[in-house]
Image (cartoon, rainbow, N blue to C red):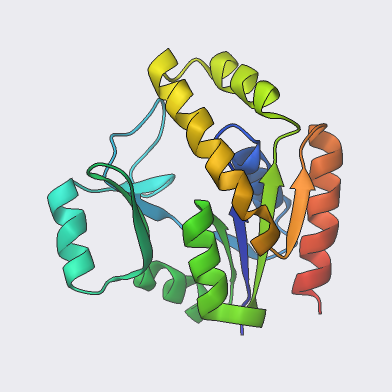
Length: 188
C-alpha cells in the first residue's frame, strides 16, 4: 500500500521547489496530488498539472457532493482542496502520494491517514527573508504580498503539529535533509 508525504509552508518558503526536486528523482515513486482551486492560473500554470482550476460555484458543488478529502476557503471565494478521487487514483496505481498543500489541509490529511502519512513543514529562515523572496518572485502586488506575510505568520504557528520541520535557509541543504527524511519514511 502506498504512503503519503505532505508538504506545507508559507508561500515563498521553497516548498514547491523542494517538492519538484523530490518528484524529479523518480526513485521514490512519488506522484503529485494535484489540488483543486477556485483561483485563476498564475504565470505558466496549466490545468491538471499544478491545479484543477474550478469556478467558485463548481468548487462549492463538489463540496456539497463530498468529493474532497479536505478543503479550505483561504480568502473569500478562493478555495483550495484535495479531491478524494485524485489520491485514490495514485494509491490504486501503487504510487506514493506527495502533497503541496496549505497547513490546515496538511494537518487534516495527516489526521485522516495517520502513520500512513509523513507531514513536513518547510520553514523560511525569517519573515523578512520570506518578504524578499515574494518580492523577487514578482507575481503579486504589494497588497497581496502583505496578505501573504500576515498569513505566513499565522501558518508558522502550525509547524509544531508536523512530523518534521525543515528550515530552508540554504536550498541545497534543505533538499538533502528533506530527501533523507522522506526516503527513511518511504522505506520503513
